[in-house]
Image (cartoon, rainbow, N blue to C red; front, top):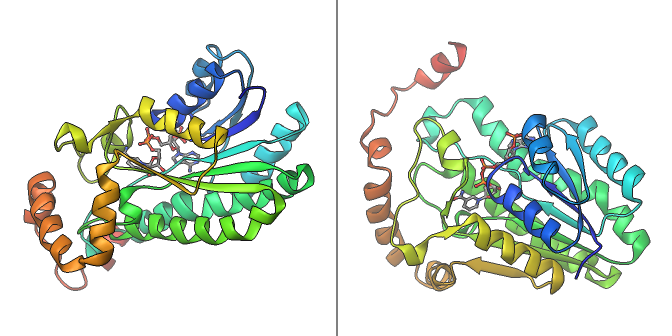
Length: 277
Ligand SMILES: NC(=O)c1ccc[n+]([C@@H]2O[C@H](COP(=O)([O-])OP(=O)(O)OC[C@H]3O[C@@H](n4cnc5c(N)ncnc54)[C@H](OP(=O)(O)O)[C@@H]3O)[C@@H](O)[C@H]2O)c1
């Protein structure tokens, strides 16, 4: 399919950038959203037809401005890809409040508010596809990822309810559920320390494959796409036999995030002190 207007958040790097390119190759018009304007401009130079809208998704005014700009330029929004996100992994008691709020704001509240702003456009059109970028972390929770897990589990519930709410109006809601993705800035920007995308190859994916899956969902909407596919089996196992997965998760976490697991945990009262610093 081609000739659609596609709004992609988090288009300045990683999955969002690859997704914008993939829609551009498919012959679609792309609205590029993120805070780093210069990165969006560089990408725009390579796309046949696009609109750059620098915006901070944690600002309510920016969310309204994104939809206004897209409508002023193209008069339609056919596909919305809620992709922008961030992860801050640490023991809960060590996470400063502003980092807790930032994750929930960007990963959960922003997609909800942007979707709410785009819905009237899609309802008037009588069609549209909303694709939310979730994560395996939205189905399987692991130590030190409490808030990231909470935000992605929240996105799961939001997507499922909305899918059932708007399907009769001709609007599809899909979730893409990737495991670790190579080639993004997600792990580099992760605090307190960068996290390498590790694990066997069959449990990893890359930005190109996730982008392809997203374009595939826009062409033929379905509720969920998990990649790589073996995570589908793990998600089922986590639902049916959670205590078996408890043991597996701890083993994997020790290997990939040992630095955090071994790190000192704070004394009572320390969290308050850290926030004042
Ligand atoms: N990488 C993985 O292993 C992995 C696995 C599963 C799911 N995911 C999900 O995939 C999505 C994309 O992440 P990625 O891996 O591609 O990481 P990334 O390269 O760090 O991209 C994150 C994008 O989000 C944007 N963003 C962050 N805060 C924003 C804000 N306040 N306002 C507007 N844009 C904001 C960033 O742009 P600016 O900084 O320019 O604003 C950037 O374009 C996220 O939802 C993530 O949870 C990632």
